[in-house]
Image (cartoon, rainbow, N blue to C red; front, side, top):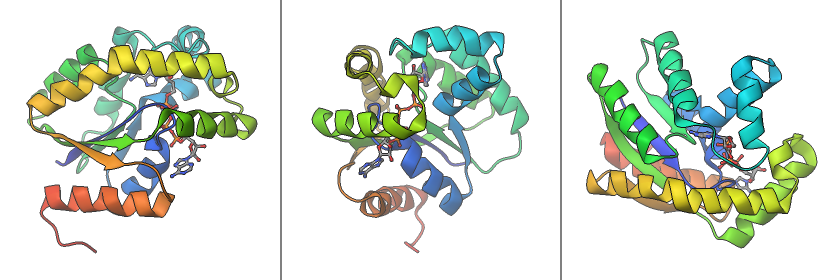
Length: 196
Ligand code: B4P
């Protein structure tokens, strides 16, 4: 299996790049943001709980997210690999993911982090808020709160993977296609495949 984490702050383009990456590499896309939004749309108890955190720009509790990922794994037993988008977002989630992958006798091959300035991120998210119907994108105070949460709770995840020599930064500003080719270049090196 080839398992990749796409890492970066809210609005850095993880979802945008993931859609293109899963198509090219045939990986299963595991976006905890999308899974949580689906639970909200389906009005499940998990969705109702998650919504109260997401609307405030907070992270959904680890046990909820880890349980959801575990059950997603159970539904995708035969895959050539996962692309994790927006997960893990805390060190506890990273440790849980390491354990879950170990049980499957596999591991993370690489963590690619999209680097984008905060001003560009705010611009992108407010712009997305105009059309996405996402309540967490329409209020600048909530967006700033998400950056603070990212800085306090999610940046330590980078250190977790730096220690394991799996972490690599990629410039996340510029055209979507240009960023995509930088990300593919990094992945291909990891996979030791010639570039297509
Ligand atoms: P997510 O759904 O993961 O979304 P995100 O971080 O806000 O955005 P992403 O980086 O995917 O940006 P996108 O490509 O869409 O999280 C939402 C919330 O869910 C979290 O705040 C949290 O509450 C909860 N959650 C999710 N996972 C969790 C977890 N593991 N634990 C706890 N809570 C969790 O791009 C953003 C915009 O920029 C788009 O409009 C796009 O079109 C635009 N864009 C992309 N690339 C661009 C480029 N190169 N140039 C210009 N614009 C670009």
